[in-house]
Length: 147
Image (cartoon, rainbow, N blue to C red; front, side, top):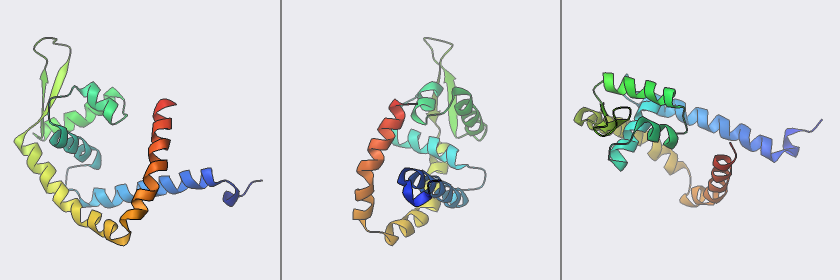
């Protein structure tokens, strides 16, 4: 039976999974009440990229199913953070736009998360992050191309 030290690929994914969970937990605790990390990710995307993407566009960006993205958007719309409106040229399509309340919520959430990110950044050298990025980018590209 192979031991973990003999399988760096298995150890890598075990570490990656643990890191993802730990990071999500810390960031989720730092977001305002009623705003999940998934919702914050959507608000961040809309705040940074603007425009009025479709729910399907957002599902592709976040690599989620359309129903999962629709649920997130419904929660954000119920909170008044996004407007989901029909496409005037094609009633079957909808567009998502960030509201002023959504932008304010995004800014407040980022302000709450910023100290956690600064602490993380301060614990490591920039070169540590830079050294990890080439492999992580190649891995992500490969995973995207090989579902």
